[in-house]
Image (tube, rainbow, N blue to C red):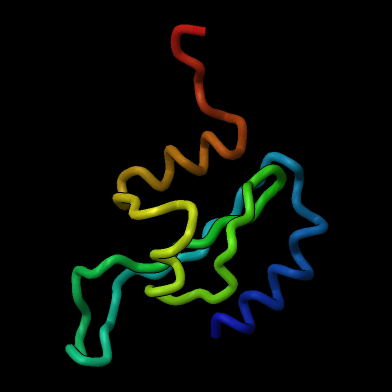
Length: 93
């Protein structure tokens, strides 16, 4: 499914406005060893105009852990997207 989404994004990306940032993640982790949902971190990938690229080339938990985003709390993801889209309020500026 991830490969199909990646192919779809390749077609969609050129049509998106410059201020759009797309995030792809999962709603839960399902470790093979546990054979059930867990509270473990899930991978997160972003793309959009001006979003920095790191060296990660695979979309899985271990690869994403090595990425530039580090470990984010779910409640911080929307603030990150708003900032990357250039829509965050600037405080004290």
